[in-house]
Amino acid sequence: MINLVNVNMTFHGKQILKDINLSVKQGEIMVIIGPSGSGKSTLLRLMIGLLKPTAGEVWIHDREITAMDEDHLNQIRLEMGMVFQYSALFDSMTVGENVAFGLRQHTTLTEQEIRQVVRRKLRMVGLSGQERAMPSELSGGMKKRVSLARAIAADPHIVLYDEPTSGLDPIMSATINRLILNTRRVIGATSVVVTHDMASAFYIADRIAMIYKGSIIAMGTLEEIKASTNPVVAKFIAGIVGYTDKGRTKS
Ligand SMILES: Nc1ncnc2c1ncn2[C@@H]1O[C@H](COP(=O)(O)OP(=O)(O)OP(=O)(O)O)[C@@H](O)[C@H]1O
Image (cartoon, rainbow, N blue to C red; front, side, top):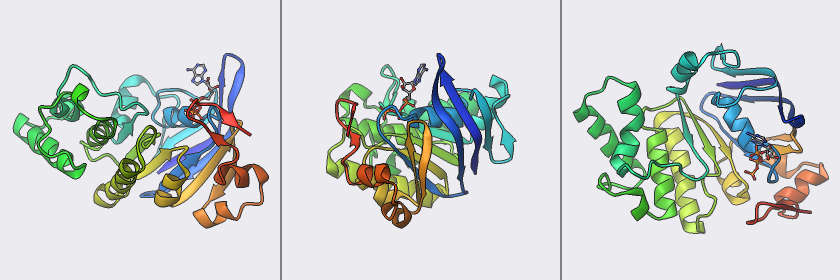
């Protein structure tokens, strides 16, 4: 369970997030949509404690994390996995070492146990036998899948995804979408997915929250979002106000 209470975030005097209240239920897939620069990635980084809000509270299960020191935050992060926007694999490590990284750092599993987990997670993302490959040998979609295998290596209670389908063709996007659903089914993880890909949002979301200029302007099930009378929401989901490949919004 994730709970954001009156969260505000300011960078260099500019308010990026305003009075955000967001509750993600156990096992739910919450999708965050919104134009480029509206504060979506910032929201994810607040949830995993990489940023501290200027004001407000961030609750992970029953613990409020904003005032925690790094040691306590690291303990909380053991229960969380994050799939970063650009996969963020360690280029000098093999695929297997990437997936094993967190397990080696933070668990007491033996090497044999770690190898078994790595094999299982790579199988889950359709990359069986790729342990020895280097990230540079992989396509973008494969890198995303390795990144997902790494994020779920320790069976986290919470998985955060930052633009998991960006830059992928429709077939690979569909594969990633199915993996997100499968991850929730297999490990029961509470999931937050930031995306500008409306097809993906519609496919995987239990609920959708739309951020616009730092505020949540709509939240609800797919049907509720589709029925929104807010013109900004209606235009966004119809693709009229949206994200372009150049990272700018059009209106
Ligand atoms: N560490 C930082 N320091 C200063 N400004 C920042 C920082 N991180 C984000 N910002 C600013 O906050 C705003 C929101 O950024 P954020 O990355 O959260 O948006 P986003 O909705 O995820 O955008 P995109 O869809 O393009 O990834 C942007 O104007 C960005 O420049």
